[in-house]
Amino acid sequence: MTLSINDVSKTFVSDDAETIDALSHISLSVNNEEFICILGPSGCGKTTLLRIVAGLESASSGSVSVDGIPVTRPSPKMAMIFQEYSLYPWRTVEENVMLGLELRGVNKPDRVTAAEKFLDLVGLKGFERRYPHELSGGMRQRVAVARALAIEPSILLMDEPFGALDAQTRNRMQYELLRIWEKTKKTILFVTHSVDEAVFLADRIVVLTQRPGRIKEIVTIPSVRPRERTSDEFGQIRRHLLDMIKEESDLVQ
Image 1: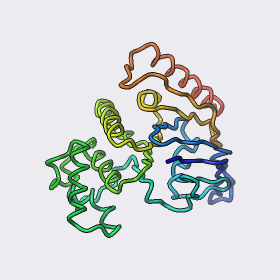
Image 2: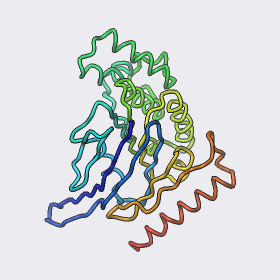
Image 3: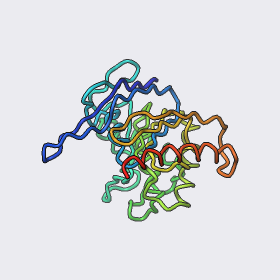
Image 4: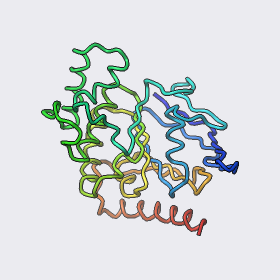
């Protein structure tokens, strides 16, 4: 399944009638089963781009398509995972995972089977009857991942999903996400502020410029997984990315 972003631009009009150019002429083709990270300075339009891809916002110009079919609204082929866990506190873990299937009218036995399958995949078997407040931050994000996978999307859109976690938990979740990706082979579009995270996870990293966000460079990561963060190759790619982001950030000083 190919995701195509074709010459997408986005302009907002603020409450005081000021025109704000958020994105400018973004074009990108994402291949089936590819893991893409979107990286760039704060305010460059990363989340806006992801929301346009998800069909949650419309582009001012340009288009997004999946296998040639235009995306004009949220699609069952895509699921989005936010930084906030967005779990319902009054629903158990199992009930939260089943929510999307419930909204689609899937019968309860099939919902339960799917919840069991994906909770096992994310390492939460045995936690079905727990409530979100009984879980750690990392476990709550795993529930969010299981809920997204339960609707069997082809594409996962992830907006800073580990940004609120402490460093140790964040690293562990990165390993977990790669394990899940290797098992499910979903196409992933992953927004992050972390250069280290992007180099560790991605097949390719799309670096955006300062606002309005344009594609500054697309960096292919050649090394096989799992990647050693202390290796010379990892360090060289990391420094190159940091230099690019610093260059963009310095433009607004």
